[in-house]
Length: 239
Image (cartoon, rainbow, N blue to C red; front, side):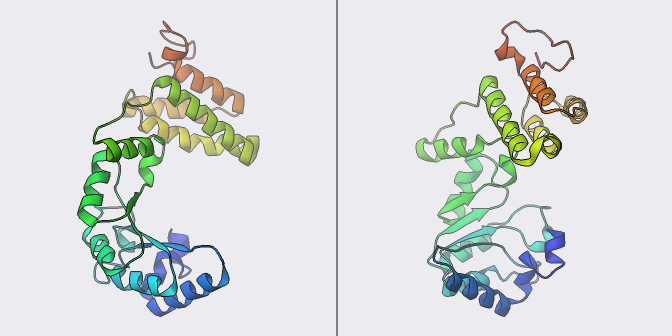
């Protein structure tokens, strides 16, 4: 994050390898649990020092390493590259997890094959679609796709997710934090085009109460909740 890097923390530390080693050694020495690390391939295209950082991490006692296939200045733009991850896997003996643009079962299989990594780490692909983990696991085990989640399952998971947000953050903040999550679920639902997503987000963002958000979810998934439903009174139902 920008506010982290501006304080010479996070991926900004990739510019100071000696300090990275010092911090990692201090953390590993201070705790009794295994310590893992996540890095990017480097600070910029001209400073792709991921392999050196990985070796420093292993020497410091890091037990597993996740590598995002972009340098810091890319942020989340452009395409992730996997050559550096493959080189890191060859350079160290600890488990290496490949990260970056892994958004489908097929992509996960391709990245694992290309990099030789021990596992993949999923990030943004899970926002609004937590079933991606199940689908990737099934594909890697059986070589075929598993069924997509039903509308009923989508509704149950989304309701559970919102309830957890409300319980953890309280009604006021929970309702507001839930808004961005609903947007991610809509973006992952191929029933809705971009215009419909905007309409639904606007309607959901106007809701101020937790109960109203749950009612919205019930209406959104009413085709399976209430067989034969054509459209809820508020116009939300996707049937």
